View 1 (cartoon, rainbow, N blue to C red):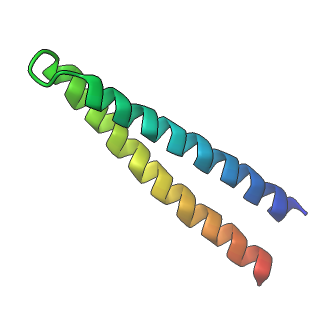
View 2 (view 1 turned 45 degrees about the vertical axis):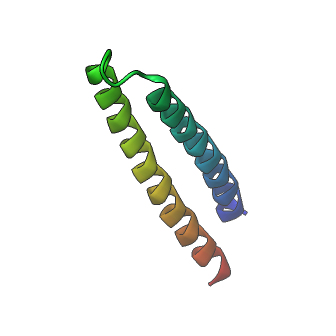
Length: 70
């Protein structure tokens, strides 16, 4: 039962990370490149971090599912 609970929490984490990534993408698209280059760069760093976190969460979720099946 504990593994199933972890999978559910992992799915919630994935949704939140995806939502945060989407927000960062929207912010990046709205920032004028010439007026706010530092903010645009920082937003890009955040978006890249969130993309990596999303991929890591997918791997973690796959590992949990594999554990539950085998």
